[in-house]
Length: 358
Image 1 (cartoon, one colour):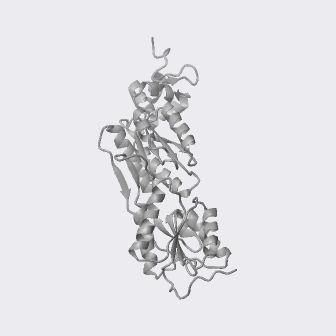
Image 2 (cartoon, rainbow, N blue to C red):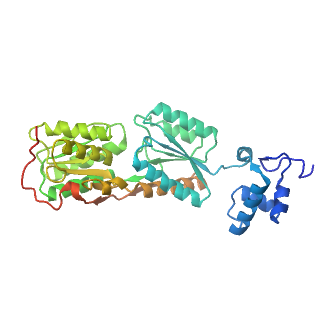
């Protein structure tokens, strides 16, 4: 059978008669070079690759990647499952993932679990059907730890990101949330605060437990007589509602540390709605240091958790695991940094207690 009549290398003909040999002749290269370009091999020089792609476009040839994947051992794809795609933190993290994957010729499939283990399970099953090479998973709240064993049984490499489930060892990339809260608490105590509350989070996942652990450790280490940990989900509305509740308590806190920046933005808005000024009447510190933090009014002091870098590290870890399935499991935990801005009142003296307006 000639090249003119057979269906080559998992491709179909857009015009009914275009083959790899046609493209090769048009571009002035070999048929094998065309095949390498279609498979995104790094072995082809950039100028040659661009010439072949121009010929592909000119001739109207469409590569059937799905059929080719059935014959390949890998698909150069990773599944990424997060729980809140609307949170700007995850936008930055996914950008880091894609940057690291793009350098290796990989692409990602993104799914939003909405913190539902059932929805998460459906996405994982669908990604398995599409034969992704690995999974980057930020486990939904309430995820059964047995999921780790299930993914291993599927022979699907998994890197847990930001949250972790199951018993070590496992592959994980994240930030030291406990240390981050300790940094914030130490800073507030140094400013003279003794009544510091923590807003946000649930106990169903590791990232919240680690934040709460850091808060309780700091309260004990500094010998603070005040401890107020307010549970909630982690939206602006939750921050707004939580600060209203705290303002009504006697005595109210003079400072709050928030589970994430969204909660902190809501808390600042709640203070302003009551005629109070964040950083003057009550210090506010967020977590994550999203781009909006530096642009808010007042600018938000925040614990930088490096989402872009976490995404890059998670992707690199996944690629290493794909290359070496039986290697030693790795945990990459980045050190947080406290980015001091106006909302914590670092440049102001604590000369009066919080006096909420009616």
